[in-house]
Image (cartoon, rainbow, N blue to C red; front, side):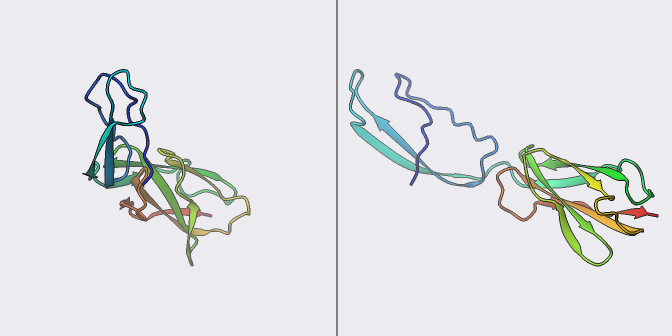
Length: 158
């Protein structure tokens, strides 16, 4: 296994593990011990396994009203904003767009708490019609496809 140093050698026999935004998983905790003044890498050690179940999944995500409101002429830039809740409080968002025929990822998961997407309907210039948007959300660090998703929102270009 690969270990990350949680605390360097010190006189303290305690360590506080900060688990903010780490994924649920099984973690091995290794403790090395040496006598005060010793320069040995370790004189004794112990390992224990800790199952971290995290703060739970994101439980809800909503999309605020797009700006500007529907309908608009093709060529408009439309700002979509999503807000997730439940879980860790640090989320990733993925925006989906349906063009009337197929769904595609408009903005993939990215930086934590990057909850906006600007839809440029003018590059290339989109045809008039009704489009649909859905947002998926998950806790930062999660590998799930999604933990929560919005109802489908529609937007008209006319």
